[in-house]
Image 1 (cartoon, rainbow, N blue to C red):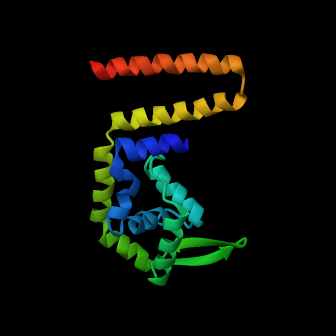
Image 2: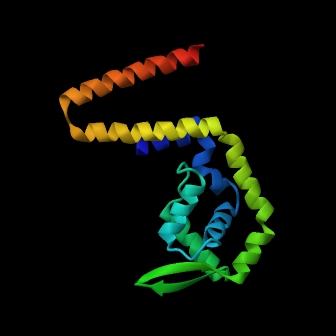
Length: 166
């Protein structure tokens, strides 16, 4: 799965691995958008942002938590402890900031969707499912299944090569 993400993020669309890092303030807007739905733990914020992008972009903890801290320092989010864990919620100031920057957020989302048209997204999702299934076959460590899987993948590789050459 990690290899598949590397190939997708670095080889197919080199800029997407740092897509939001290059768009100053983009991650702040994504976090505020996620928190506008409901209060969440930092982990849930990252998962919600990942969901927004079909799992093809998932911010790291090293991006999420410092940004949440910055947003808290700026009064855009507030925290409370629930069962020993921090839960973040949007404040009125955060909601205003999100509203004031709605066009910018929509621009980021539109840029992503225009570069990742539905056909590309479907192909990427299919490739991700293939990678997950590949890992399941590898985990079985059954020689017969491994040989059969290698044959299937080689056939698929040949067919894709023929498609590219058309």
